[in-house]
Image (cartoon, rainbow, N blue to C red):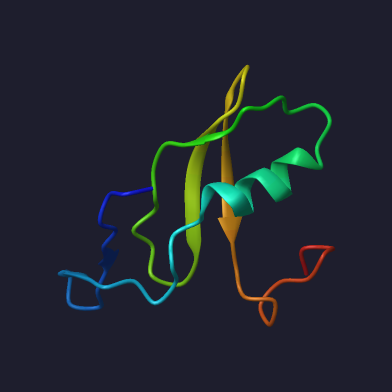
Length: 79
C-alpha cells in the first residue's frame, strides 16, 4: 500500500502510527490459509486506530477485515 497512513492521536490529531500497516504479503499468508476465501487479495484500506493495524481486504468474492494485534493482548482463542 503506497498511501500514507495516519493514526488517531490522543488529542484528536492525526499522527504517525505505532503499528505499521498490513502488507499484501502478510494478508496473503493469513487469508491464504482460509480455503473459503479465494485470492487474489487486495488491501483496500488501512485503519487509523492507534493500537492495532487493520485493513479491509478484497478477495475474489467479498470484502473481509484483517487485523494485526499484539500477542500480549490476544491469543489464538481470542481471550
